[in-house]
Image (cartoon, rainbow, N blue to C red; front, side, top):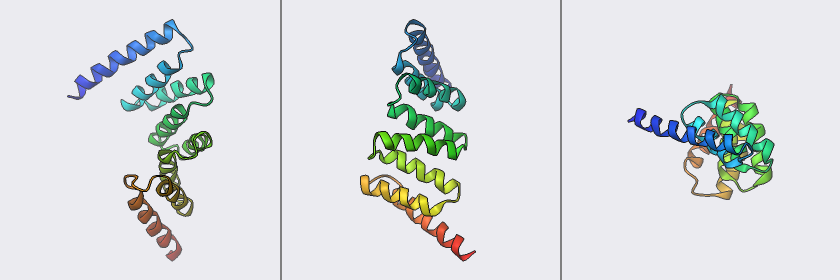
Length: 148
């Protein structure tokens, strides 16, 4: 099953690379190529594509968000936060960006700030999946830190 999907990804990669060859400034081709590379675990390569997108279009919310997501996969939380900050500058009600930002803060042990970001998620989108559970988790972690 995985190989079947991988073959489809490879076909898509080849098509986007061909599109870029024909039109070197084709933003959507770089963006979609980056997303596919990320989906198959090639995070460093995906980041290069997202960088290219933002060089061509500094207002690409999707590129910054996906760049941040790839950095999270590489456990580069501080760098990911910088990209997620850019996302919310461009789109202040982007709940997914706040959620990922909270995860980064949690991984860095910054639970108080992580709670604020999750509260933003809940304010923007009250039914956001896992946000209430993550909020409780961070509150518990903060309580544990205060007790230690």
